[in-house]
Image 1 (cartoon, rainbow, N blue to C red):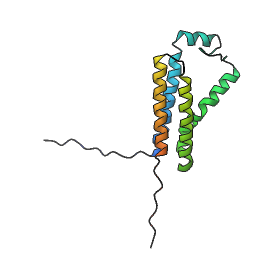
Image 2: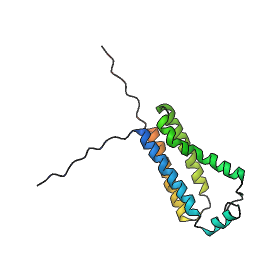
Image 3: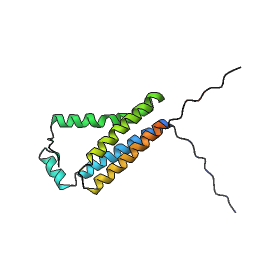
Image 4: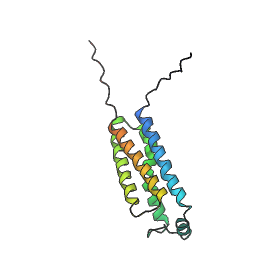
Length: 146
């Protein structure tokens, strides 16, 4: 009888976990918006230079504001790899919390299931990001030399 091969699970660095979570959140965020263009009301409004179900007009100010809104989570992908642990932990908690609030607010009044489901997944990912950052392992204390 053969014994099944046992594989060793290796720990993943917190920075890599956070980076992967930000990438995943951004993919869900992007696909929810992309799928929106299959909706006739969104597509028609976009062709008219408007944002469906809002009073926003697609212009320089709107597109610049949208870019500024999405830049922090985009930059978090690389910042989680580059920042020191103390700063990294704080920035991840703050940015994830701010986006969690903005995503919940954006759901108010929406009835499309794909949008609500995508937003729920984004919120869950942001909670996991905040939790992973919150539980960042403390620095190890080197033993004193005699």
